[in-house]
Length: 211
Image 1 (tube, rainbow, N blue to C red):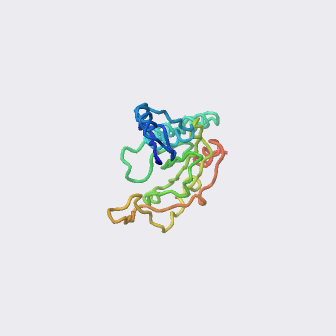
Image 2 (cartoon, helix red, strand yellow):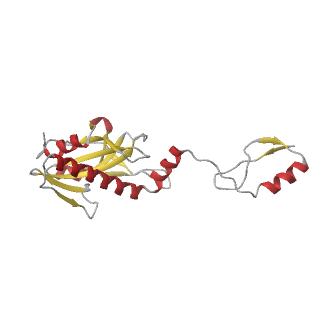
Image 3 (cartoon, helix red, strand yellow):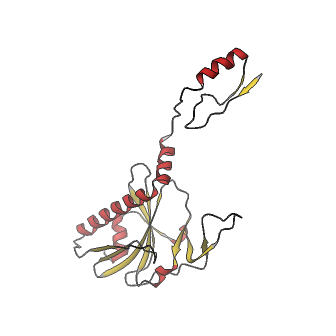
């Protein structure tokens, strides 16, 4: 007789093998299957799960870390005339309004950990109507939450964001028939269109024209 036992993470069971079994062995195994088994989880898998489940918390942590690093960079450059405003409603595609050195920026923040395979972003077309908008795509270490590098999509101070292009994005989930509807107010921007910035000092320079 061949016995096949399959275990599921989080459920009871200790085997995932095809085993020859006699009646006496089955009785023995029956007594053992009610013992909970702890399956080791690799740190990388645990981190990936947390980033998915707690994505809203993660976004806020990344935003606060980014602002802290940016403010420190500006302070060290002698810039003190800094204003930070947050959007209460996600309607026009930006998360923050930052002003320093006579430059006001409507900023959309995006974040992906360094192991993520994300190759493009959905950007709201309403950003094109802002006088000096930009997108900052923050890469970060999934374990330590260390920020960097940064991917920049924008123009020089006092100039409008480059055209987002014509590729309309679609909903991430399909309907009952699998159809994913278009999102007319969003465009797909490929990763290759972003400029890679290594340090927060470079980000400050792009945002506010600091040398």
